[in-house]
Image (cartoon, rainbow, N blue to C red; front, side):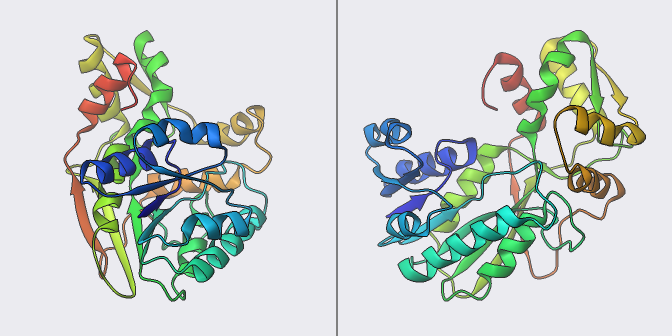
Length: 288
């Protein structure tokens, strides 16, 4: 039995579908029973749990041969990351008590970076999981290609404004479906200790490549415009962010190249889905 967190999202859903397709039993970990109904109809066991409640999380993980662990994103974390510290405490308590056969944690490219950024939650969770008495794999996924869904409306107007700069600077990206399928593969593998798996597409993509992919999907020119670095803080604050620095530093890290894969002892895996495929799905109104 594989317990899947985030099953109602793109990555968790893809992992669950891959496991079901392989004939593996799946336990859908959801926050309320209504969200689990569609998965119950697919033959999944349903466990209602909250990442902030260690008792419910322990119950959801108990008896599982594997757990796919995710932490809900927080795009405006408080200084010092108190929310993620609480989630680390509840998650590690549940894992120690439930003792699943293995844990696959959805981490991120750049998780090894110690400077505080929006990706620091993954760095902190990896650090906490390393010492647990359970085989653990850190699935460090590249920038989600599906982040470009926010560009579709502008692309239809013929332009995209981008935080990724220089516009021809390629960064590692990957499709959410590839992350889910890789997570499913890992849950069916056996190992001891800790593993790091770095996952990206077969090539890297720049802001200009994103625009070109949308141009191809739409059948019309799409240009790219950089969003000036000096405007970011004010822009994020007008969007309601109280602490935009971690997001700004994350973008700086991608743009300056110090957020990238670690290499070395990590296992490198490559997805086969191109950004062009994802752009076509996004334009058509699909999930990517």
